[in-house]
Structures are given as C-alpha cells and as structure tokens.
Length: 399
Image (cartoon, rainbow, N blue to C red; front, side):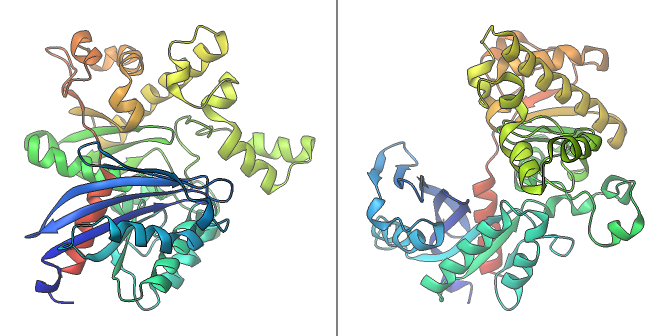
C-alpha cells in the first residue's frame, strides 16, 4: 500500500471482548486523525444492542441487533462493518483497522501490521491473558475473513512497558519459570503512551523527569516514567496484580490461593472467577464494583472499600517513586482518575509527607492542574487509547 493510497479515508478502531465491542471511527486526512463517531455493541449472546454517537454527541443509533446475534462477536462483526460503511461520508472509504490487543508477549514491543504469521503468534499468547487475548484474536480473524483486503494493525497493552529494566520485570521464583515467560509485563500501555506523549507536548520539562501516572478506572494500574518511558508499573504477569479494582483484588498473598484450593476445594476456574469477577470493590463492599455507587455511600462496607482503594493507590505512588528515584509530577487519568475528586483528595492527603498538597477548588472542578502552590505538580489528563491506536495504524499504513 502506498502513502497516497491512505492519504484520506476512515479508520476503524476496535476493542473486542467476549460479549461486547467498542468501536471508534476516525477521519484521516493529510496524515492527521480526527474522531468522527463511536459506539458499542453490548449484550452479544443475550440481547445485542447497538449504540453510537457522533463526535458532537448526536445519537446515531440505539437499536436492538437481536436479528444479527448468533451468540458471539465474530458473527456480528460483518454486520457492524456494513453499518459503519453506510454511515461514513461518501468520500471517506474505510482504509484500515486498528485493534487493542491485550498481550504482545516478550516479542512485540510496538504495534504491528497483521500479516504472515502474526495472527498465529498473537493466538499463542492466549495462556498469558486467557480472558482477553482469544477475544482480540477472534475479532481480527473475523475482520480478515469479512474484509481480506482491509489492512489491520495490532496495538498492544504490554508494548509500552518493554522498556522496564530486569529488576522491574522479574519475580523471585525459580529461573526456569522466568525463562518460560513468567515475568511482569504490565498493561494499560496505550493509555500510558498517550499520557507520555501529551506531557512531552504540553509540559516538556516535566516529561523529561520522574512522573507517576495513575490510570484509575474499573481496571486500575499505576506506572512510573522517566523521560517518558516506563520504568516500573503496578500490574505484572496478569491484570490482577497491583491496586484493587472494580472486581479484581490487586496484589494478594498467594498463600490465600493455596488455602482456597486445599480448604475450599477450588480449582483454576473457580479461582479465576473469584479473582476476576467477584473481588475488588465489589468483593469488599458487597454493593457494587462502581466507585460512583460507593464514594458517597455511608454503609461501613462501602466506606472500607473506598478507603482501601485510596490507601493502596497512595502506597503504590510512594513505591513507584522509589523505582524512579523520586517524583517530579503526578498524573491522574481514566474514569475514576479524571472524575473522582473525593478519591483524589483522599489519596493526596495520605501523601502530604511526600510534598503533595491539593487545591480543593481546582480538584472539585476537575481542573487540569489540581495541586496547591508549593506542592509537587499534580494533573488530570484525560486519556485516549483509541486515538493512540488510530495514530499507530496510520503510521504503519503509511510506512
């Protein structure tokens, strides 16, 4: 494909799960990408529904797709492609697709064009991310079957963390397991890459320093950056390690798992269900996995869940400061990070001894900079993983 062939057109960005698909459409013109519309298919396998809005917020679709629902994402994707192409401007043909892929293993340290043996290699990483990788691979294959001429790009959650030194990637386990790939990989890399890029443009001096980024959402992790590259991160071999999340526990004593297997007769599937779907905020509170349901709730279990989350986030920030040799700035991003003033204040109040102080008015307003005068600079920067995927897709299509 020549550069002139992709000078103008539309790009599809896909994030595929087992029963849902999030998608974004970007316009490419003159090398720049701009969002056009986005949406999601939910309830696939039970009661599929398509919802989509334009970048301006105009409702484009909210309709049942039960007639197309064959119980899985691959079967419904061709219909989604047809709907997308019908809603594209006539002069903007679909010219490429970029996928969020959870795991790139030790091999892929940057996005790749899906060609040759790449799809098989991606499938081989499924044991490292059994709940997500097979879904990502299935979507790429379904798109290739439906539109074999459409170039596809795989963008990895793990790639950004390939810069981590060995001390940050190694577990204290027998070397034979480490050599077999049991190591710390890190996730949310596309989000951290976007924040690092944003800082390099808006705060270049700080971007060259030591920055901790807190990606706090239903899935949550934190990363320590030096000169814009990942040095250490809270998630490790899987997306379970680190701070508590919506339904995931974060780091726990592995002896608990041995105990549950011996005393409760639990097997790998049982443990997977508990760790991925029943723990975290939901497990502690017994009420909800959504921080919005808990932060103002006076139920003692809800208060404990919120305080536990904030305490672990604060501890992780301090820990990452050790890994990067200090801290020059802190960034909050993702759903809770961007829209959780109560949580941000709790975290920063715990870190007053480090030199953090919050400006309450700015924090309550979700301002760009929320630190008080004299504090370590603290920012809210909305992340955009989809635009990172679009940019990578353009780069590879025009290479």
